[in-house]
Image 1: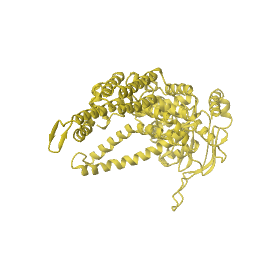
Image 2: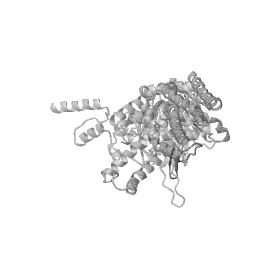
Image 3: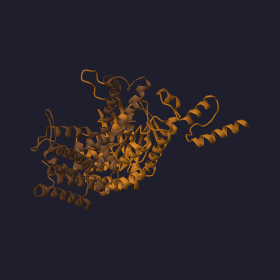
Image 4: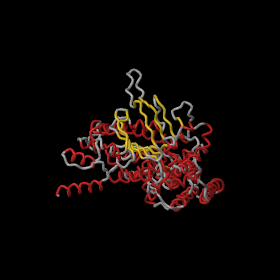
Length: 314
Length: 277
């Protein structure tokens, strides 16, 4: 247990240095022809598969947004990656190790869960302890780390999510966004290489949502943590490097936000919205006003609009 | 309204008793109760009261708070006193006699001593333990104190974990109960009128959704805990290890002295001030 823990710390620092080399090599997460269906009750007919023959590769250090309407299989995919669920068919590789192999030991399984953290939707249902710092310590305590090292990691994690001043508070005194940041701190204290956010912003008010999104972006850009962000909110998806749309258990669209959101019609057929900016530009084009709607940034969008207005005046 | 309930009656503070190790406080409380029961002579009861007052002073808990804690027990105290007064038979002539009712001097003394005993035990254990120890420290203390029982396969860690989670979720569930009650009120539910049975039945539509959501919470929490590599006690360390400090030794010496004095009084000084048992 301890050995793998130390190697975990080393691999993180090494990976931070060698990200460019790593990216060209094997992808961090590799999903190969994975299918999954939930077990049905004995007498009933087998349930339809939630995921059908999905293949996906995710590079180290990337920020992937996973989109799809309810029941599309996106949360199931997330749970397959950190071994909460096991695929019915297909293989999943994390950093080259086959995590779906039969010979995976218990220690290796917990090793994978440490490396791939997961933050859920309801902040209340993930906090275990009655004091913020105790809760952040929960993960490292489970890993069997030395008390002094746990202390150091807890302080650092709370600093990262900007919650140091609340460390002695009890969770029920905090707002939704603050609780969610504590939950994130609890995950980063385990020094993961990848964090999956399973609709972690869905239950928050706009303020909390903004704080959590900024934290997620910071972890990805500054700490080099691979982020998989499952969301319904298109304006959050825009902030990712890559957007993957899942529909009906298969990958429907995959590309940069610009590429994906330019396919307004396709997205609408699977019941998804597009970011407000894209929608505006799409409607303008539809009505015969020619503007380039590949821009997703609100400021740039405003500038483009201003240009159009000036041109039209002339 | 439900938010007003104070949890575990813990009053944060900075006294020696607040700083003491929870394990030591659990031990001290047990010792204290044993010593109070050992007290036989009236003199030792006076000393018990004196020592309890000393504990209250050390804890820096306001006496008003302690009187509030004693209030719900007044009925039990009166009840005990009542039976002791009328059912204790003394050797001397009764002080008061009316038909079959006879009241002896011993009966009155005994009743007073019983009240003192109940009040002291309650005050002492509140001050030593519940008022000065946060529920989480109490759980930690119990877990570590009972750790040797793990060898005979008593699931000590699991019980402590359950306690922690229960404590964590009490405020959450109270908040949720409030929400559900308001939702039911908005649909015309009436919780405040009618007899006992009618009121209890009115609570049913509150309890059912509360249970359903608790199960959903439990399942989500379990998944979240698995994601954080929880696998029971196996290979688990703690961030804060409990250490005995000088203050713990001081309190232990104080308690032992108390015990010794009680025993000495019992053996040698039992006849002084003796109206007793």
